[in-house]
Image (cartoon, rainbow, N blue to C red; front, top):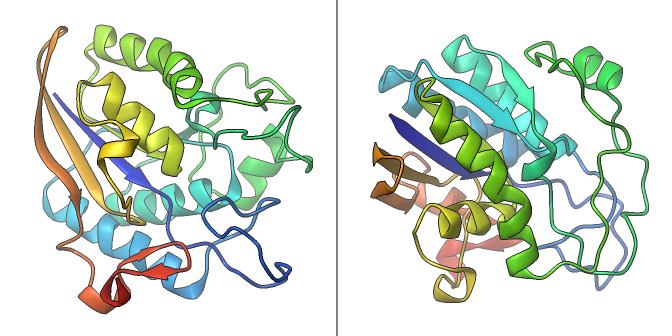
Length: 220
């Protein structure tokens, strides 16, 4: 069993006010043109590796769009999973409505809705890294216990780091960058033993197209 983990593709920066923190853009932006290409490159890589597993995605648009592009490339479907949503750094819930289940199915034809998708699905902040790990851990444990085959988890910077930490990998402070549509993979040897196969791998993305949202890797 392989668990693949990726961050959404580069989101669009259109309409964001000056001084915006692009790592945590406000609202619910869609992907940029490059972001869709990044998702396509990852989809092609997974399809070439004969990935036939489940795809779970944060309900945010940028994650669902990424997952949907990958699902097209692999002829699979996408299941929205609120546990993978972006972390909330401020008190309260995000200041936008977010997609309801019917909207997800209408906008992204590859989305397969679970039996019950709560709305609103937002968590309340402020969250810490440990809080994000705690909300993701039950989902990871259930996924591993199901032994239902390979899976791809599509999340955000903080939730991807949390998935990796829960699986026994590095913590966020140990990794300065978390590239859009990079690929981290764990081989599940047993319920208590996950072996990391690759970590933030971007070999499927042209070097000058590797980003962490607005930051380009080749400028670092």
